[in-house]
Image (cartoon, rainbow, N blue to C red):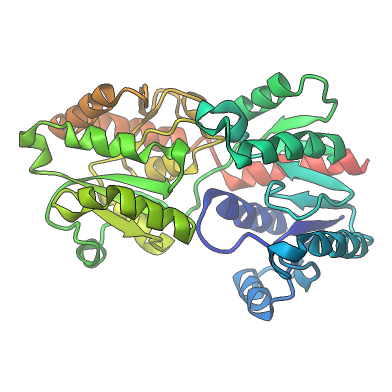
Length: 381
């Protein structure tokens, strides 16, 4: 088969980008007789980076095929959209199927479409009820379900959410769980890396994620500040944050006063080769998300031998099982107590490290690639 991917948004940090890269690699390694075409923008630098990333896999080709969504700016977006439709049509003529790993970020929805819907949190969370993002999801989600030959979700939770909000849809929906990359493993502890982030001297709680309402970062900071002095004075909270420049600027403007004193450490866009050391060395990974499609950092932490405290909402109980401490993320007192227990009880911490490592073994990109190929074959047939 000839399988195309929208590769305009798979470089850099973020769960969706990691998903796309790992899936493409897993598919190409397991199916050497099939061809995988990465359709990217007319940016030569991006094409070169993608070719370097997958240079060891001869059945992956990179084509400069589609315009960037901001190629002509917001004022001429309709022209960009029109051109995208034509170029996608031309680019997909020789392809059996086109996989959009980020259909909400795509300019257009091409034919021969398989889409991965990672979440629909703008529809499920009240915090987004009056937002432009909710209006966009209300328009785009039924469009995806109507045009796609099949939809992949990372969890049963997202599949059920789609069925609840769009019960009339006949589009096949297949949950295929993701996995942590092989680079995450226990025992990665570099004092040089920890020193570089000022985390070598004291135990620390760790958070990794985007600056986003649903990530509940203010609630996490409040829970840390509610810790008893005998715990708080001996531990830090390290926030590894990513996001758009305006989100980062707004966050620093609103919460900068909490980042100036000792205790809360703000880190931005930590490379993955450093992130594995931060996971492995952390007292616990704390992820009090309000809504998640999969929660990839939870598995990354578990696979790194880091105990996890997370949310009892959305997909997290499905993904983590009994291998994490699950709390109501809106209850900062409950979250703070869980952090305190993890800090004061080495036995409790060791038990959740063991459970987490065992749980992470249930997930692999090889399995995700096999099940995704089954979806491709079903829609082509």
